Amino acid sequence: MNTAAVIFAAASVLSAFSYRPDGGTGLFPYECAVAEKEPLVNIANPSSLPFQKGFFITTRAENPYGMEGLAAYSSAAGYSSGGTGVSAAWSRFGIKEYREERGFLSAGKSLGTLSLGARAHADMVRISMAGLSRMEREYDADFAVRLDPLPFFSLGAVQQNTAAAFMK
Image 1 (tube, rainbow, N blue to C red):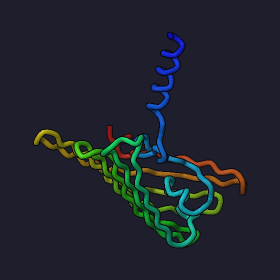
Image 2: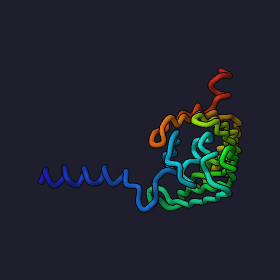
Image 3: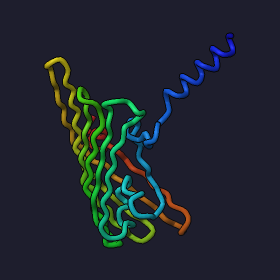
Image 4: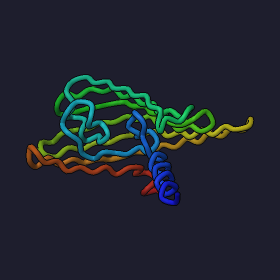
């Protein structure tokens, strides 16, 4: 009987972290400093924007963890000429009572094996419950670098929230 209880408890704990059909990135967003040089996968690092080819647009809607009312949306559009890339993006996460939104403007420039990028963003958090509501808005910037010394090897870094880091 105790063995069955332990197995049931372990299964319950593990299922709490199940991502369901979506990627789960809406609930725990992450940044990818370096990704493959393929369209639509490398816009997280602004210094990777020059590797996009022409115009691009992407959109995503998720229901993280399958929780009713919890939603994550994002969309991005941009252009790359091969040496310079620009993009604009928007994302939203939350429930009716708690919502996070973020808007981005990004640019990147390739200088051969070295690429540089910058991103300005506005972050908004809105909380509304029982007739009370509060909204906060912050503005910040990120800087990025990417080094491609070999065709099969890339090294990148993103310094997020630069203004907050230096204005303490």
